[in-house]
Amino acid sequence: MSNVTPFPPRPVQGTSPPLQTSFDRPELSRIMDLYGRMVAAGQWRDYAIDLNRDVAIFSAFRRTAERPEFRIEKRPALRQRQGMWALIGEHGAVLRRGQDLAGILAPVERRLMKLIED
Image 1 (cartoon, one colour):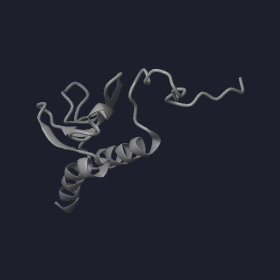
Image 2 (cartoon, one colour):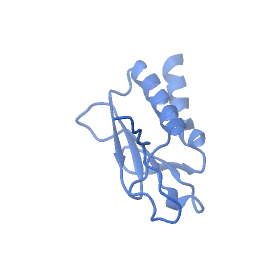
Image 3 (tube, rainbow, N blue to C red):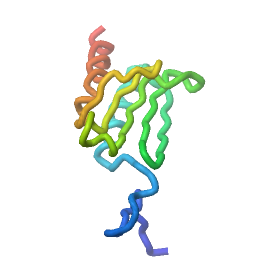
């Protein structure tokens, strides 16, 4: 009972890559902070996290039964090309792509500022 298993499990040197891609604590904290502010503003009501081998996805919903309004994707395989972060809109269009999570979240945060000012 005293064993603590880290989440996600860290691969041992010289072994195969991890079985799933995940958000680390600072990334998830930043995303959940934005989610909390959007919930407080009345814009989002639900979220989903999908962790696969190649991609980790955070989806934010206006209503539970709809398509996600925004998806934040982390694809480490694209780190050296287009950037591992992507902000994808409701209809599947890539709105922003880059190396930095803060830059990807900026359009949503600007939208939040407009909601508060009105």
